[in-house]
Length: 241
Image 1 (spheres, one colour):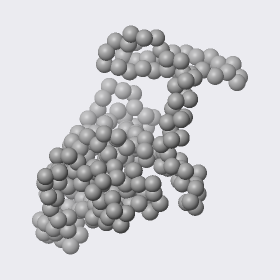
Image 2 (image 1 turned 135 degrees about the vertical axis):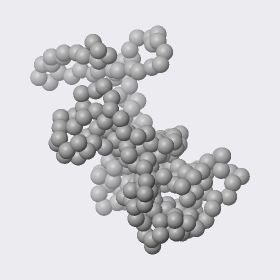
Image 3 (image 1 turned 180 degrees about the horizontal axis):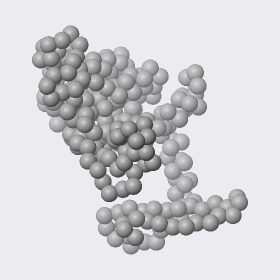
């Protein structure tokens, strides 16, 4: 019906129903899997993946946060998206919707620094891997945000979906037209935190193996000179944020 999946389900009090959705780019030849072993396998995988963090002030909340951050991080690129949501209105009927399914350099650097403070360090390694690759590739042209594969964030557009109440079906982000100097500062702090744990070179991208990254402070000085300010400000075609 219009490309949508619809169903009506009636459950008695205490009754449970598992819904299995399989998405594939080819025809599914087998029957739907039994959800019970799928749940058990998922629980085992997350139990093994998320650290105990009992040494922190609140181990339960820290463990929950670690699970969320791991779920937002690509195992392939190491990029951590800001959120798994899009088209959420800032305020009802305000016309400002945001798509956060992208990697903000500043945000991932802050997350990496937080992980460096308590360990374990796998998410720190991911952050170093992704941010180092972007610095090597783009240098002083470092963008504030990227797709999870390291590509440019698409500009805003609408899609044929109902959207959230008070908002509308808008995806993409205008971050592509912005420049944020603080991304360089947070990147330096991330690499410094990794160096303290002797992990600054962990997960270095293969394509960068034979290339020497330019000095991070010199990149920040270059953009500061271009913008004509000691910190950062708006220039034609850019928006500081």
